[in-house]
Image 1 (tube, rainbow, N blue to C red):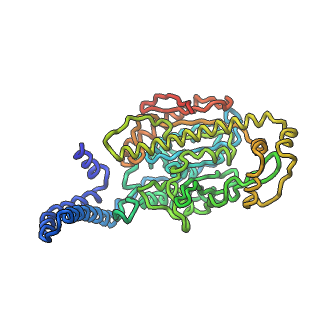
Image 2: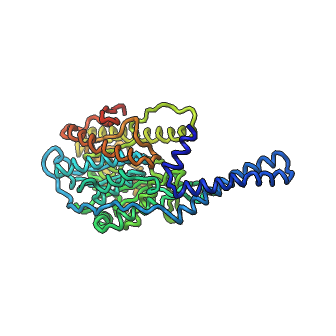
Length: 498
């Protein structure tokens, strides 16, 4: 079993540009090891010190082999993929009457999940086709994403999900290779807390989204004019390591909202929790901060602050579609909704990965539970008499007129009685369409070397998520939330126990 695993890593998963120099350096060290051990014995050291010296010698040899392989890999990197095509340049369509015509603000919510993003990208392609066929792409007003969801969000923003077949999004996921996303680093035990570099992945970002003129112009339209009908608002989340805050980048200039009942403007998010993305470089930094999976990659830096994966705190950022954007229809694509699995009693790595999966799944379920509370509050609010009930709740207080981003505005909002705050939250219930892959998965979070499986995962969700979209009753009232779980053969079951 161990020898088979070593063979898979060295000859199937890793690039020969890395594995061959590593084996050569390790072989040279093994040949020299007897002489080195003899030199240690000749020193006449105490037994404990001699044993520690031998351990240090072996570790040094391993680090030397890793550094040699890393140096060769960086001198002779694999050729970057040249498969991408120009962006589909179709104009955003305006909504038409029909089952989706009743929805004014449609949003997309993308979870994190590493290489499982292949499933998510396939479902995203199905949603694009479904909306395009119904003339409803123009009603999509926002997209919020975490981790690998931020990468998939870029394909949607650049209009690379639909159009010609296969789309650029499908091509990327169907031809993914480990060498296209990560590269080795000069790892030093005890001095560096990361082991890989995302340089190849950043190169792919530049190739697909920055170097292609049509894709670049599409992204710049979102960045420069986020409030126009032809653009979308986006929210890409990350974790502030030092302050333990959930933060994000957006193309919005103003994160205040109008309280419809009083006319008072109120801050939606504290001003130190978000950054305005204005350029392709800003977008790239936001995407890779959101995908900064610990402990694989080095912290992403914004000024003097350090960030890592957005899924550390919140893996399914539904709040941006409800509390901030007040959408009336959300397409939600979790990646850990079904996370029942057999327990591995041997592998430490499998145990740690299982803990991550459990936590991400719990966060996703909590986010869906919060939608229930959001919808129930909206339903209760509709029963209040607009004048008498609100007047009694507010005690006749008038808007203060203070700056929306000020500390005073935050303190004033927090000082209002609970009944008043609840009464003034004017929003409508939101309809949820949610779909996710079901166990057993063909590709898991870190398995970016599974090229064939990633392509199958994409096509599975692209086909069967579209079937689920056609079956979903978009005319129904949003009374119940369920997640369609699509199995490896296209079988579907529904998760409703939130």
